Length: 243
Image 1 (cartoon, helix red, strand yellow):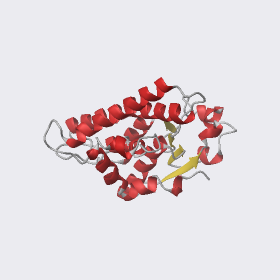
Image 2 (cartoon, one colour):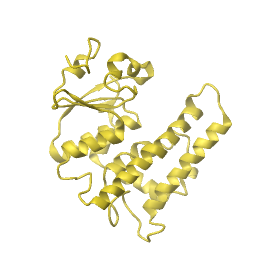
Image 3 (spheres, one colour):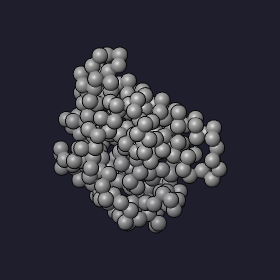
Image 4 (cartoon, one colour):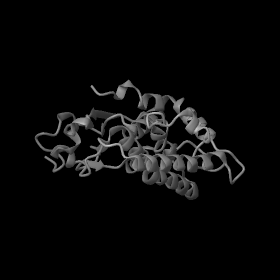
């Protein structure tokens, strides 16, 4: 048995064939769920899925930590590799799927400058947006003690990051509004958008009102534009609800 698996590893995880996703339908889980659904629509990509409930700390158990020492969902396991290959961190998972499952770069770019642009926005959200919005959720909703300074700091930082996305999408400094974050001209839907949208679309959950979002009209249109994609609807649907 691979060192990745132990007696307590769920059978559906260790006996999977091909790609297997261990997930929960949080914003981070939804990034990879959406990517897989998009790949299925284009290429017929197949995968299996198992679910964990992070509220029970299942992701802190040894069987899970063997797969991802950081104890976070989602985990992507590629059983076509020998031994099976695990990928942690959502941006890494999107890039892995882009490399191995998207041969035509439908969700990436062949041009190296456009590719760099996509990586910049993917990493921007991974390193700035998600941590700020995640801390906004934590201190405003889940912290045992409500700390006004922390709530205000992360709320303001999240709004600042929304403003950065608005600059890019509005074409404020280029004179040309964009439909997507990366790519020439109006841009192309890519992993940059897939890695960002599941968090931003949850702005109401994070406590931001329609009034708070008024300074970001292009961002709101971007949210709605992506929400209409069939694979996005599937990747955030009841298909991924906890069983």
